[in-house]
Length: 230
Image (cartoon, rainbow, N blue to C red; front, side):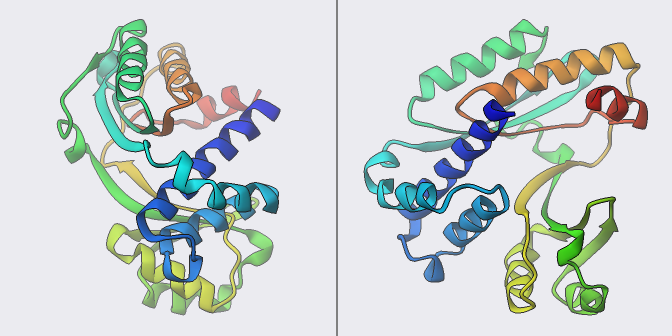
């Protein structure tokens, strides 16, 4: 759990650093930074860590670049990897080696973009959600509002992401996590054994320090979810 927590913090710190480099250290005038700080709060990152990341951004972020890699694993499973790195050669080498390790192939950038839709995803702890706000959220661009055991998940078009974020701030709804995510237009269902092999490969990608997000089109069945939670 400590390793997982450290990885989450590392991703958020990189996002803070890039946001500050792009638009400055004032969250009021920097929506990307405001979002990163909000996600830091949702992940229970200590305030001093956030402040340190903002102050050190000019030095630490100057060499950071954002990259994407795409390819296929076995059974035609599409993989889309988003990275933030200060060493492109290291990152592309690591990503390619993971594809190779799991009998996959890394493709050219843009070759898989058509298979995913970019959506805004907002995770709201159930105790922070008021059903009376639903009409306001629909007006702000909510395409779907789904209730899970501990959270309410709001989905928007990419173009409505900023509008929804602003509306939730106006309504004083605390969001645990907000992000632009690539959702597969269609998923591929595999048997449990093959699915677990794909998930193992995805774990390898996610454990790489340069990787921020990994998206795929493997169908996650209830049986697979139960196996993952054991």
